[in-house]
Length: 252
Ligand code: 9D3
Image (cartoon, rainbow, N blue to C red; front, side, top):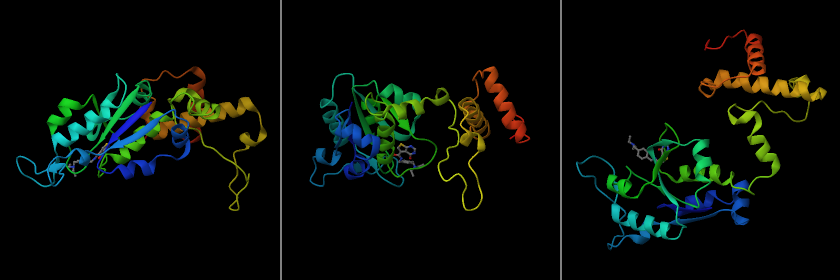
């Protein structure tokens, strides 16, 4: 997969690449990430990429021409069927389903804004989609671009070992993870690893993990369970989990 990030701060993007699974995919040639700087497409003597907002108000608005030319240059470098995604707080909330869809695109242009955002006509003319990471305020799109790249690249075939892909799919991917433990079995403060994990009964361990995953999901992210049809075993385990805590679904 080929990715271009259009940004005024290319160093922020390159500094975040090249580590871990993402870094390995880049050096293995599974993904390729480059930056395009709209500053290089500014034509005026001051090389301006932003200007004052029509209608007044604070801050600056990103100008159409240098951004449009940078996006078109990025796009020209990618295969047909590539998409342009703008990053911004008005976008659709990014999720795993979007990451899975994006990893089937041959190329991706991520447009990272700064200041008050883009001239709306640029978005109308150039965007195939708009992505937000959620309801919080970033100072620009670069960190969001890194998050999207990380989520997409780790799904590309050949990027993860068997270990990773198996783990990603534990319990179908619709539950929060179960808690994990490693040595030592007893900490200085006396807290122990749950006995079932030490005893080694694989069926008991599977049921304990599924129960923890269900219980934590119900308590922390009930939205993930809404509209999910739980199996008889899952309902039993969730019931046990909540009973042990003296809680019933919908209690909090
Ligand atoms: C202080 C300016 N805000 C007025 C209410 C609007 C605003 C403009 C530009 C807020 C943030 C930004 C910069 N944000 C991003 O580029 C961004 C972002 C985000 O802020 N939150 C969640 N996801 C994303 S993706 C890109």
